Amino acid sequence: MISLEPVAAPGAPLARRNPVAKLAAALVFSAVLVATLDPVAPAIAIAVELAVLPLFGIRYRVLARRALPLLAAAAGIVVTLVLFAADRSGRVLLDAGPLLVTSGVLLTALGLVLRMFAVALPGVIVFATTDPTDLADALVQNAKAPARFAIGTLAAFRLVPLLGQEWQMIEMARRARGVDAGRNPVAKLRLFVSTAFALLVGAIRRGTRLAVAMDARGFDAGTPRTFARRQRFGVADGLLVAGAAVLGSAAIAVSVALGTFRPLIG
Image 1 (cartoon, rainbow, N blue to C red):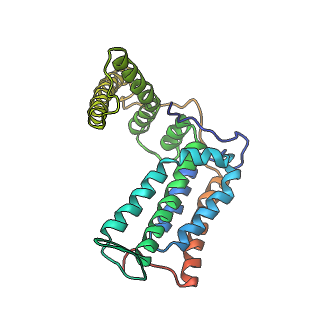
Image 2 (cartoon, helix red, strand yellow):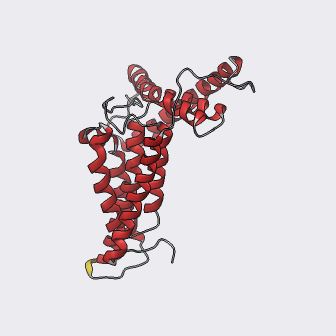
Image 3 (tube, helix red, strand yellow):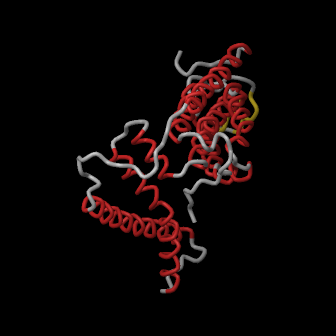
């Protein structure tokens, strides 16, 4: 089942920081890395992220499990560049008719894959150490986000785990009725599409009912709201954001010093 609950140790020093501070630190750290295409800066950033992971109270095995979908994205990047990259500079590694693999293509693919991991891992860490309710409260109290947006997003996050359960229920119901694709790949594809459509219809209906229920309870009222849990943004939270900016800039500086820096524009 899909879970959005925090998995960090509650006593970890960085896991206790304000949710907005952790989100801002992740955005700042990732934004700096978007400026380069070389593999050095993202590799340094990934090393930094893995080094500070114990401070967030997350085990490496848990992070690997949550970041597993990134491997599929990485494989897609490599395959796409190998097949369709316009720049084929560098030493030829494989020449098989229309398939031409060069060292330049693999270097570009490596840089993009590392950058994807370096940019995505901070977000994975933030959501693995943050309770969704605390994040919604902090967005309203500290980031001054509209309460309707924050609470609506929180409600949507809370419904995500139900999608996995509903998918299993639909599959079991169809299997009980004798609807099974067997080993036929075409039938499996058709069954997958129909199951996804049924899940989409159910999600839309549930979302509509939830929106009506929230409006009936005054979530769209213009009166000032109160909060059960106060979210305070302190000096330590500001230092976390500043530290993320410094570490991201340091990774870029090392790349420039080594002469491997490749700007995204220019």
